[in-house]
Image (cartoon, rainbow over all chains, first blue to last red; front, side, top):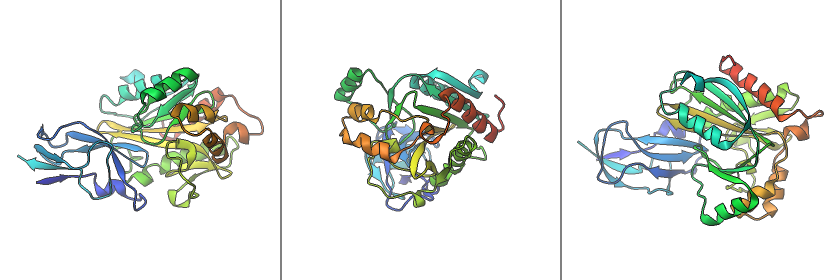
Length: 82
Length: 236
C-alpha cells in the first residue's frame, strides 16, 4: 500500500500547526489511476494545488474527504500499486 | 494560443473574463510567462476556491446587484470593482520564479508589487508571514490580514496574493486596493456581521488614501502591468 501525500517540500516555511484543506476529489475509491494523474485538489496558504498519484494502481481508500483538513505528513489516501 | 499570452491591461474587465483567460492558458502547457492586469468595471464578490455559495448567498448577491464568482486560487472572499486592480501572472511549470515551498513562492510577487507601489510614491513593503501582526482572523475575507509576502503600507494591507498550481503551469494572482471598497457590500453578501466592514476598513489602505495626487485606476493598471512585464522580461 502506498500513501498519497502532499509533498513535504510544498510545506516549507508554512507555520507549524497550519493544515491544508481538501478542496475536491477527482477520483473515487476503487478507481484505477496512472502515475502522475491528478487525484485531488487541495488548498494551502492561499494556493490551490494538485495531488498526484505516486504510482499506477487503484485508489484504495480516501482518508481525508472533501472539505476535510490535514497536517503536514498525513496521507490523504492510500493506493494499491499494480 | 499566442493571442492569449504577452502582457495586456484589460480595462472595464469582469471577473468572468479573468477566470476564462486563466482557464484558457492553463488548458495547455504554459511555455512562456504572461501577464494580465484587470481593471474591474462593476462590483463582484469573488470567493476563494474552497468557498461555497448557498442559495441564501446567491439571493443576497442578486438583491445587492452584485455578481458572485469563484476563483481557482485559495484564500478568503474579495470584493472586486473599480476600487480594485487584479493581476494574473502565468508561469511555466519550470520557470526560475517558481519555488516549490509555498511560503517562499510568494516572495518575488510580493516584492514586485512593493517595488511598483514605491515607484508611484507609496511606502509599501512585502511582509514575511512571521513579521505580520497577529490579529483576530476574519478568515472569510482576503483583506482581513496579511499572508505570506503580501504588501502593507503604513501598517495596513494593500495587496493580497494567491496562486493556483496546475501541471501545465502556475497562476499567481494579486488584488490591489486602489480605492476604498464598500466593505459593507462584501459583509452583506456573505452574511457576515456588518460591523466587520469597519474592521476591514481599519485593517486596509489604498492607493487613493496614500497618494497626495490620486491617479486613475487605468493609469495605475498600466504602470502595474509595466512593472510585472519588466519582472518577467516581457514586451507589451
